[in-house]
Image (tube, rainbow, N blue to C red; front, side, top):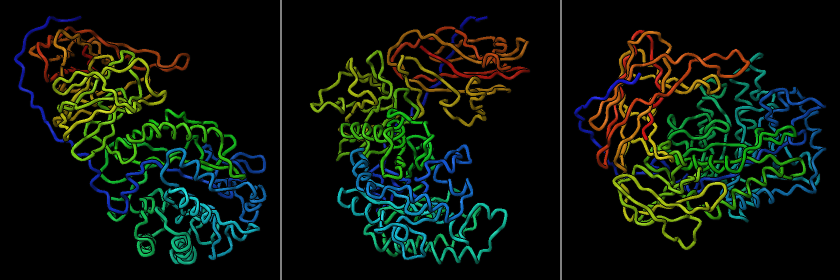
Amino acid sequence: MNLPMKKLVVCFTFIVFSLSAFSQSQTNERARWFTNARFGMFIHWGVYSGAEGIWKGEKLRNDNDYAEWLMYRNRIDREEYLTLLDRFNWNEINPEEWVILAKKSGMKYVTFTAKHHDGFALWDSKVGDYDLGNYTNPKRDIVKELAEACKKHGLKLGLYYSHWVDWEHQYGWDHTKEVTGISAEKYDQYWQEKVIPQVRELLTNYGEIGMFWFDMWIHHAHTVVTKEQLLQLKSLIRELQPDCIVNSRLGLSVEEDPDVDFKTLGDNQLGSKKENFPWQSPATVAHSWGFHALDTEWKSTSTLLKSLINNVSLNGNFMLNIGPRADGSVPFEITQRMLEMGRWLNVNGEAIYDAEAFDLDKDLHDWGRITCKKEGNKTKLYLNVFNWPISRQLNFTGVSTKPDKIYLLADKQQKPLQHKHTGIFTQIELPVLEPDPFVSVVVVEYNQQPETVQQLVAKTTDNGFSLTPRNRLVTGDTLQIIQKNRRGTIPEHAGISAPEKLKWKIYIDVPGKKSIDVSYSFQGKGSEAGITIKGAGTTLTHKVEPTGKTVGEPKSDWIIDNFKSFRIGEILFPKKGFYEIELEATPGKEKVQFQWIWIK
């Protein structure tokens, strides 16, 4: 039941303006090229590529299907594993083709698995005999060939080296040693006999190495590796190639050791927040890193582009993997998507290369992500539009500075787009046809450093405001947000079991009456629970109603709490400007599971 409205005196709302300061401040000089590049290629290729994820008719013994783990997962001994090299077509393998693909794809660096966990060196190593030089005739040195190709085509070369795990060396770390154990002395023998001299070889014999990419995915305190060993390895790199950058999977975090150049996120983990230090997501086009014949989880070009843009919008890099086959060929699905990304970057690369995060919250707008760049006194914001509005109107919220010019990045003539700017809201008129089928980019230019307003709820693509527990003004409340669960059939919400006040800040550019809806779940039977919404001098009150249960998944015994929306009235916003919306929830004996307020 809806109860009548009554008037309320509105409290003053304090608006915080800030000058945009989007420089990636915690970047050392070694890593400048890295943060400028933003996009690179990862190459997983080795002995395992000959098996393609299948050994003697048996699929890899793990549902994660990382083909490069075949030797360990399927318990293959050293000598039999090397018989996979007989499947390689050495007359067709040309690493320069990988570099050319990287360049055509708009990538600025290449990182190659010089030695993966199987311990096999893909160069002509003089350290032991477990290397490509000893198993090819004539001898092949893939690291050398890649180094020459990268130099020829102007790309930085990075080398992946598995330092912690080595399944070949008798004293290297193999996870079966969780059963048998290994002494610190024996592990250090592996370290001094193999790791240090091989890294020295790679730093000495192959010209400039832009990056060393290590792969210890847990902190050193939880491994057999000591901090002293890691510092020894890092010191060797600093001594022989002072400009070579090192990632956090060395085993030292950027917080623990500021001399670590960039943070590596988890496999296929995208950025979720802006960072002021360099960081990177390693990602795959399908699922496996090494080529797997049964892998069909191909990500679309749109998905990959949005992943790249998302990371750049948060000051991050994106390194996308290829897994060549035993003849050196790259799967069609990977090549197709990478070349499509390259064509997009050929037009829109200005929004990616040397671009950075902007000050506004990453989830402020429902149409995409913002990247930015400063050129002298001019600032450019790149509105990467993932969802081209059917209304052909793009709502841009949060910048109080008036734009100097707005145009499509794909338009070489930079024909200005019509727009209206009011307060901190800019509405941009878009053409009927979007310029790109994947992601289109709108450039907003300012002749000064733009001022922003923080902690706003932006107008959505369909011209409403969605007020949620997550985008509220954080004012010291103790609200606990419950993540969506049961495969998303239970939406994200706040469980309110004691009286609670929540606030939001919006900007109204078109005055008038707006309808107010509220969505919640309530499993109580009494009538003691209530919700009050205040804004623009108006108070709306609503007696909370039981919402009952619903079926989340048919025929699956999947009974869940029902979330239902209620129209509770209207609020008149008399003029343009900022307004504070307040919700007061009084749950009574049973908690109110609050989901959102919708204003339109």
